Length: 329
Image (cartoon, rainbow, N blue to C red; front, side, top):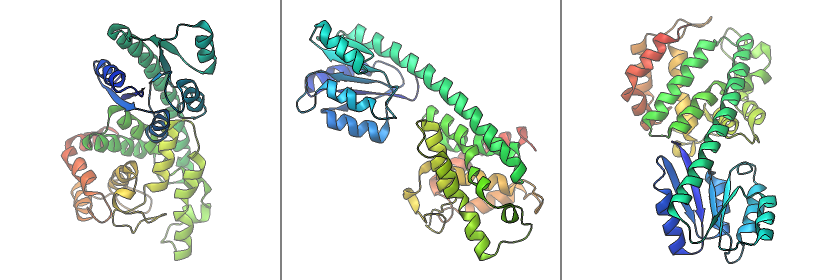
């Protein structure tokens, strides 16, 4: 369950504290809390979660209304929800089940029962997410490799840069779940090139200023292809497609974002993509030596690249070089 999160919603501080303590006994699970339904909706919208435990009786918006609104959110539509109530009436439970409740806990909440129900539902959630993301990941790689016929990049390039990206993500302290998602989403970074005319994409020489402006639009095309998906993995791929050509000093494209305004996955993929592009032979260039590419990355730290991401890259350089050796063209 490493990388999973759990949200507890209760307006009673004592109940919230008690259930939080119970939840912290579940290894590897991040515990979030909310003291109102509105706060819970905000947290779910911003961060998502993998399990929600909510009290029924709350001021303003009660647990039933909260569940109706949660189920209307695509990001929460399939997340299991436990309702906590001291009401044993069958009518209430039937209404809650029809409204989208997955399971119930009765007050006073028993510690062993709480932990067991949470573990069981999160285990099911873990399996469901893994199967969906494996399927989405395979689709992403197949679509990305379809670009081989329209670009000089190879499947090995996609595999290398995806794995480099996961190594940098690990060095940045991101969760194992996010490391995996970044590895699976990274190959879609240039999917927007499908919308670039062949006369520009395959041009052997340098682009004119007008041609380069057209080429830069592949970031926006890629984002539009992938955006609005219900899948967190595909939404991450959309973010990467849009942001992987931004530069830390604000001189990149398409939005000229600067520093931390650039999504972290985009900052990570920028390094992995450039390093592999430099050290790979193309029809129009020879491969750089590894030491030359490393010098370039160092020189561009703070201008093109996020210095913290560069540090994570160099801290894991032996792993990077192992990947490079294993996945040769």
